[in-house]
Amino acid sequence: MDALALEATSGKKTTNGAAAAAPAAPAPAQAPVKRKPAKKTKKAVVFFEVEILDAKTKDKLCFLDKVRTHFPSNLFVLSVSDPQWYPARQSIRLDPKGKSLKDEDVLQHLPVGTTATFYFRDLGAQISWVTVFLTEYTGPLVIYLMFYFRVPFIYAPKYDFTTSKHWVVHLACMCHSFHYVKRLLETLFVHRFSHGTMPNVALPPPYNCTYYWGFAAWMAYYINHPLYTPPIYGEQQIRLALIIFLFCQIGNFSIHVALRNLRPPGSKTRKIPYPTKNPFTWIFLLVSCPNYTYELGSWLGFTLMTQCLPVAFFTLVGFIQMTVWAKGKHRSYLKEFRDYPPLRSPILPFIL
Image (cartoon, rainbow, N blue to C red; front, side):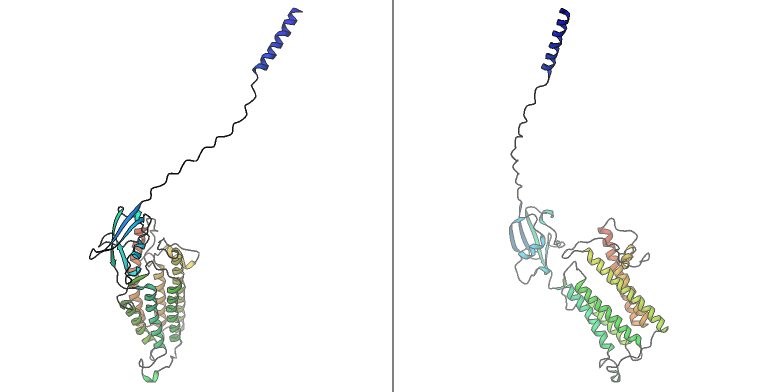
């Protein structure tokens, strides 16, 4: 009995011990202490002092105080208040004989201190590129039509206001007019110019207008001459030439639209042109300036259509000039873009 009593007593103690060892109830969670947000340190605002001097005489033209770092250089031209120096004819430079600053340049990215000196140079009277191209392209359109309608003092009096009996002459007039009307519309609604103006040495610019107007008169004189004879292979040659001409005109327009879409309105950004969904732009795979390639093809088609020596000479001279432009643009692409496609040629695939 005593043994049983002792075992029972020890069992109770063990139970009480186990109960005592049980963990205590968890304490209620304390609310998180809200920390006050750290005060933002104000960045020090850096201002510039800018003086603008005349590049020739070194006279001070104006002084600007408290100019912010992100101030664009193209706004400096507004500070030169003489009304004859409108913004298009002003050039702001870091050095009197240096290059003009770009419109997108800002003070904080230029190699100047907080006290900066810039130099102003007058570029002379300017003319917009739109006006230049409209003048160049309107002339050939009007001049060719004067020969087509045989206005007086061009041919013999008996041919005044007469028309040719050859249908290729009328087709050539339609193609020539279509080409220059297309150019005028592209100038107004398609092209975006990186530079808005050019120096107004003379109005209109003599070289370009002499080139386009003079060749238009020379070609039109022979194509619309009363003694003009049609191409030697007749209708087959004319139809083939018309197909080439229209194909290249559509291609040229497609390239101009593709190039326009590369540059947002009002910007001067340059990008690598690539083919689009338009099949006429696939030539970008092989050529840097396919607009010139298609332009050359158009005039080759016109030469084949008219079988006229002045047209062939105009095509040759145009090809030489476009090759110079294409090579220059191709070099600038290679210099500006390291990943520029190496397979491309300037104007003719794999040749030139």
